[in-house]
Image 1 (cartoon, rainbow, N blue to C red):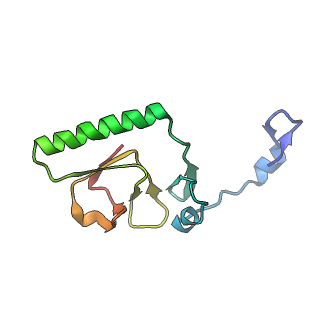
Image 2 (cartoon, rainbow, N blue to C red; image 1 turned 120 degrees about the horizontal axis):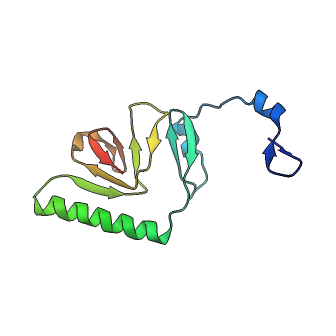
Image 3 (cartoon, rainbow, N blue to C red; image 1 turned 180 degrees about the horizontal axis):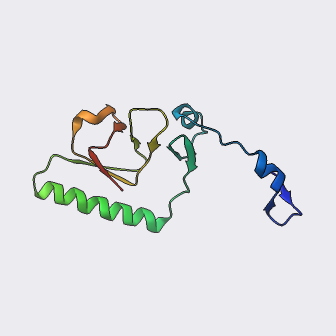
Length: 122
């Protein structure tokens, strides 16, 4: 869409002609290397590069969760992003949660993918 008058406003005519595109997991796979996105109900949401503070908090929280599981002799597995989680058994819902706690090994599809939702995701 073009900007109206160079002020960042969208052209109202183009808004009326806007058609929502429906995406699938194939569109996610077609993204350039290094581009991260999630797919929710057929819509792509691009992910920003996490900040250093975000990554420190992610590491600290995931370590505390893993320590808790270990102390209580649990069998759950903690995974940190990027890590693919398919929310349903379809090709229109795919997320990369910051932290995934997988307690049911039967939901693994491949080593880096799970179909959930017998998992805790943050």
